[in-house]
Image (cartoon, protein in one colour):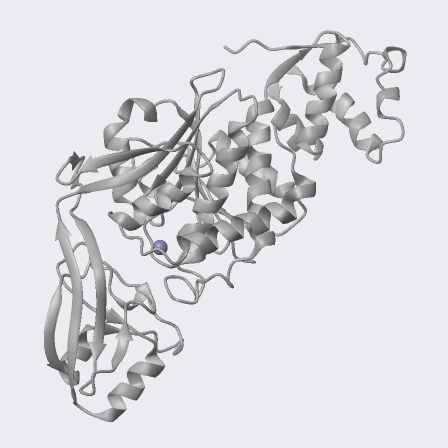
Length: 438
Ligand code: ZN
């Protein structure tokens, strides 16, 4: 299991630089932006890219057409482009149909979205599920244009919806068991850093790390468009879904706020307990929330027909930070240290999942004599000797087959790695043996 603490700072900078590279791409639910994004992720890990044709049925949904935008602008009477898609891909409502017309401002402004409370930011808006079009701009600019009067403007959105496919990326890393750990992130937002790309970047780095270490679990990393992507994947992979023992949806993991974990629908699944324990070990603030049927792709993984043990890891939760779905969710809003901290947290979760187990004390009649087996000496000189000595006693006492190492760590309020290290030493000394799985 990677223990990359010393390199976390540089890893954070690397993840930030991947986000910087992906940031300008105009992603959408389908189309070239998603493909370009996945090709860049492929430079890091050998993703398999799947194309599911338009019209494919996915439970109650259908794979949509591909939206392609080549450009868009609003021109004033003097021929000046007062809004240009080239300046920001948030300027056009995602999914807009093509428009080429002239309009008076009094009509045009009904199709313009702004954020009056944040007058310098451009909102992100979509209209995929109903036919329409629109522009987004800063409220400051809107007010300036509004003040000029009811002039005429040339309005152009060069966009088409055509049959194509829904694209997603998948990395499958087999372990010694078929039981799976799922990591899922969405790749469908245009230029937004925290909501979308922080998850892509941290998931890519996790995939790189997990590819290079021995694994007990099989790992599946999904890079999918939100909602329709997970629905389509689940529809195509109902049999694989049964093997998902633990899962996380990862997004909004780059801002400076503390982590928030939203439990799976099951609420007390192993993943829920492990994430809570990993967070509580850090002596830093965090928030635990119960499942609710709104948010990201955990909504689909946790739909009642699947009810998979999949939680949602974020820092600032979606929709509850002002920068959410706006141009302010940019490269300055995400921090390398926060990306690295999120990565570290998930690695801690993997470490517990990989190394948990139940053991049986082979010398349960009073405490065995640890000194004569050299079990106190092994920790001489270490800073956390006391932790490790206590870990030996806790593991011996509670290894009755009924308590897992995670439960023992929880009771002992000791770091999981200390409990695991004590367990290994006790097995080596012949004092403990693994409880065979039932
Ligand atoms: Zn979003």
